[in-house]
Every structure is written in structure tokens, then in C-alpha cells.
Amino acid sequence: MSVNVKPIADRVLVEPSPAETTTASGIIIPDTAKEKPQRGKVIAVGTGKKDEPMTVKTGDTVLYGKYAGTEITVDGSEYLIMRESDIFAII
Image 1 (tube, one colour):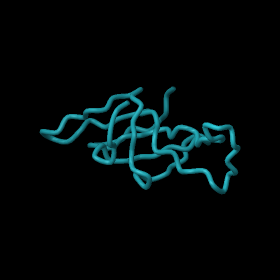
Image 2 (tube, helix red, strand yellow; image 1 turned 90 degrees about the vertical axis):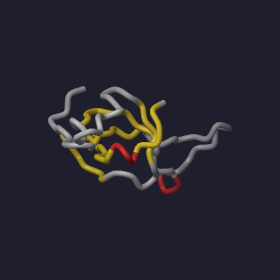
Image 3 (cartoon, one colour; image 1 turned 45 degrees about the vertical axis):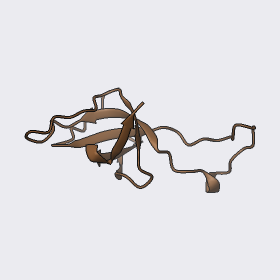
């Protein structure tokens, strides 16, 4: 997938995973109770800062904080743009 957004410095563009719609036991979760996803796929990465190369790369699946990043819409799709330091782990 190609998006016409190029993050700068240590910023990363992430496509959030869809929120869970059912629990493990099969209970349907209404829209008003859905948790904000904390996992996503890296779509684009910046070049890093001087002396701090980027750890994540395009295509990685990452975990991030509940309130991390800034929501943006590009061509009708929702993304988050955040600093690499807001990412907790690559899974």
C-alpha cells in the first residue's frame, strides 16, 4: 500500500488495526464500548534523527500507547502519525 505521506525525522505513520467487534467468548461489542486499538501496521517511516537511526520499518506490526499519535485522514483512510518513542514494541 502506498500513501503519499512522508514522515520526517523520528516520526512514523501507522495504520491502526480494526477494533475488536466480539469478545473471545463471542459477545458482540457495541461501537460505544469499543476500545481504541493499540496495535497497527507501520505504513511509512521518517529518516531518523542524527545519531538515532530508526528501529521500526515499513510493514512492521507495532504496539503503542492508548493515546499515542495524532489522527490524520489520507485519501479517506484513518492513520496515526507518532514519534518512534511512542511505540512500545514490534510484534
